[in-house]
Image (cartoon, rainbow, N blue to C red):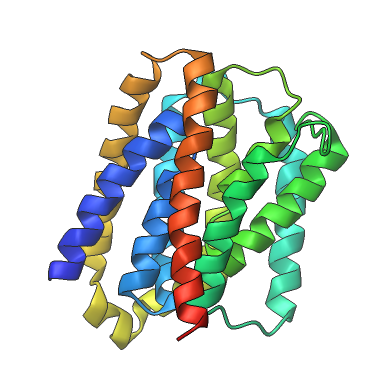
Length: 247
């Protein structure tokens, strides 16, 4: 019961972060779930909650979604699901926390190193494959997806809305690969389906709160704040991965 309550509260608070910055919330939620639950269960639950959360965010900002970039991104995501369905890979807490810890480094790479543009079909295709593959390993790929918008002239609402659909694709892949775990007896003992449903509703509420805050901040503040935010979160998880590695 305590774990279920904590997960519901976390789903609400982390969705506020995602509603504001289009990232960070998923990182925090995945870390918490990996700490509380077995990794396959955490991945499946994170995918379920975040899929609903991102779809809701996309609906709230639907007039800002840049749909043309999503076709090629979706093709890359589908290829990643097909590839990982053929590969025997068992994610562990170490890999999850290592991935969560290292990904924020990407937001500090000089833009000239990877001048990516989501409007470029090959960039979108490759981005869909890589980000979905990382999502299947560590649970989150927000900073990877974010790199597709480095050279794209989009406002904060367009970035948040379009990225919400991209992230929903990645979370749907986790549901396809790991979703059956949530129906097992062990998963039901850890977090019943009723608690999962409440967590989904809480995440939707958090997205709405985050959207209100998003309307009140500037593009400059939006871009500067989220870089430092994900870096702090990543450092915390990287420390956790090191602790796991050294026993």
